[in-house]
Amino acid sequence: MATRVSPMPLVAANWKMNPNDAGDALDLVRGVLSVARGHADRVEVAIFPPFPWLLGVSEVIAESGVKLGAQDCFWELSGAYTGEVSPAMLKGWCEWVITGHSERRIYLGETDEMVAKKTASALGSELSVIMCVGELADHYDAGTSDQVVEAQVRAGLANCSADDSARLVIAYEPVWAIGTGKSADAEHAYKTMRLIRRVVGELIGAGAARKVRILYGGSVNSGNVESYVELPLCDGVLVGSASLDAAEFAHIVKVTAEVYGHR
Ligand code: PEP
Image (cartoon, rainbow, N blue to C red; front, top):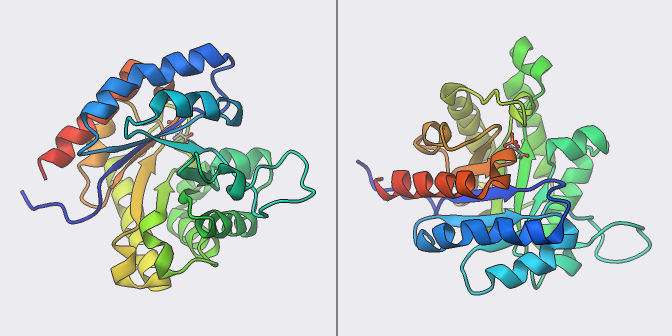
């Protein structure tokens, strides 16, 4: 088996707007801590709780090697933007932020231009970014997934450079696979991730693009995670629903560590 040359895989837990109770949030993170810590030399684990739980979760994971991230940020660093949270506010106790999640694109009308501004601002504030891209079911059915994903990558990275590559992750998340239990087949995921790698290379140069990690997301669970993380171009997974079950998420981390440990 060939030695893996790309960076450490990333397993990211997007809790979305869950759980409603602070105590449950702390129990959830405690539930994955020992497994995540035990595999910290082979898998980077990042937890993305809702904003109100960030502080409590940061205290639980302190010194564990598990990373913390926010699910979104605004592009300005401060000012009259009611309800928004800036990268400058996150910096210092969050290492990561997600931009362009499809639920924000769909429910809050986030455009590619907004995603590009958020991504550049977060990177400029020295946060690491998971920028999400992915086609709708209609695009998939019409066979236009590649065009849609390529356009999102080009637009989303419009303000980025090669200097950002080590802190940039792109999550390929087909929208029809998110929260539906209908995960993409591995071949479709592979072809799209290969396309993303090529486009990123055109934008920031092939050398820098090799440092950019590419994840799959969309109904990942302990039963199907292996089929994604064993793909040569896949640098990990972004997990939504299954990350709300500590045992399930811990299993995903364990499988990822085993697969990458054998490369
Ligand atoms: C997500 O929210 O990014 C996601 C992939 O969700 P799920 O795993 O529930 O499909």
